[in-house]
Every structure is written in structure tokens, then in C-alpha cells.
Length: 290
Image (cartoon, rainbow, N blue to C red; front, side, top):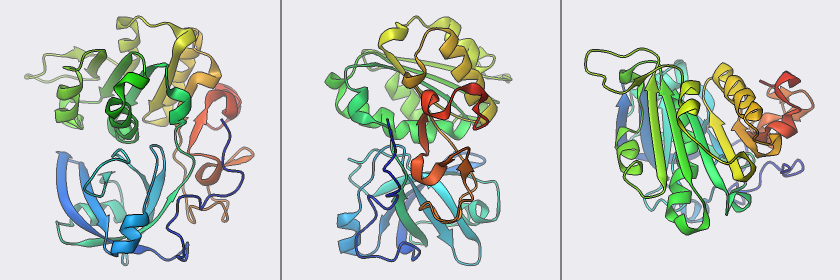
């Protein structure tokens, strides 16, 4: 799997200045937990909205006036009818400002940018998703895309870990997925509470509860960087080939289109060559990118 060869604007609405954000109106806000909200948006300009396309794993640069700009991955599948969904954790000035927005408000959108997950290459494969916290958001885009074309894929295993029960995102999705034939869902928290009746432990402990064939499995991993590193190392040790271990990286991005160099990782630019990479492309666990 290789990037777009320094053509990071592929997928961007044609005829627009890549540095000029387009206004997108918020149609719906879903509170996932105390620090995470999902925003359903649509570009205000009808022609731009009609031309706007993206793939799972890509991201947009989101801006709020006087509060800066940040990259946020799509949490929705491309076939979502009512615009697109971005899931945002309140962590700084920009994300804090977004958490104060309501339906009817607008934000600036640039993109989509980046190299997506290789959806065509995933066809016919068993898929193992391992997510931590808000890391389920970009994987949700893939999972919903796969479920929309269920016959094209093998087994689906979703393993999800959070610090506490209150940190769980996409509860409704998790409940629906575990009722689908051929889909296995495991959830754990680092620390339970009085009402938690599920598993307690790190997300890596869930790997001990599933049986899969590593030679026909592709794993997609997203979450805190240390969690990604540990899970990829564990899965490689279980026999999954580095080329079949996929993750999406986060780096401090300024331009989003491969020009400023802020998001460099070894010889790669995360915004242009990624953010989706296989472990083989990263050069292994010891590459310095994880």
C-alpha cells in the first residue's frame, strides 16, 4: 500500500483554494460522553456539498474563527446520506470551542486530505479492529462501510477499550454490531465502577479471548500511541504479517497538504503519505514513528 505520491489534494473539492476553508453547517450534535461529541455537518454551498467525497481513514482540517485549526478524521462512512460526521474530544482551544457549538452553527472545513484505508484490499479478508477511546471514531468509518457490503468481507472482530465506563463512545453502535451475525464485539475498561458488569483490563487482554487465523486477517488499530504500539507488537507476535497491520497516525499538522513539514515522521509526511500506514511501511515497531 503506497501513498498518493505527493498528490495530497486528491479528493479535495475542485476549484477551491486549498488554504481557504469552506463553511459547513452543523445539523446534529451527539454527546458520546462528557468529553466527546459527534457533529453531523454538511457544506453550505450545494455544489461543493455535491462534489464532496471521502474515504474511510481520511481527515479534514476544521477551523473555528479565532480558535485555530485541527485535523479530524471522518467517523462516518462515505455512503452516509446526511453529510458527514466528525467526532471530537475536548482537549484544547479549537476542540473546546467546537464543544460549545450547536445545530445551526458553522465551522470551516478544508479537505478531505490524506491516504485512506485500502478498502479494496480488505475485501475477502477477516478483519480485526482494535480501538482505544476516541480511536474508535476513524475505525467506525471503516466498520460501517464494511457492514454496508457485508458479503465482501470475512469475519469481523471489534475489540474496544476505554479507561472507564464513562469514556465509552458509540454505545448504540456497539450494541447493534454485537447483534449482527458474523460480527464479534469485545469491550473492556481499565477501571470499572459499581454499575459496570463487563470486562476489566487493558484492551490487549481482549486478544486472549478471540481466536483468529493470522494468515487471512488484517488488523486495523487506532487509539493512544502507546496502545497502538503495544497492540501492533502483540499482533505481529501472534503471526499477523506487518503488511496486514494497519494504523492511522496523529501528528501536529499545519497545512494538511504536505507542504509545511510539521507532521514529518522519518522520511514520511503523515498528512500526505498517511495518515494510514501499515507496520511494514513504518519500518516496524522500532521505526520511531510509534
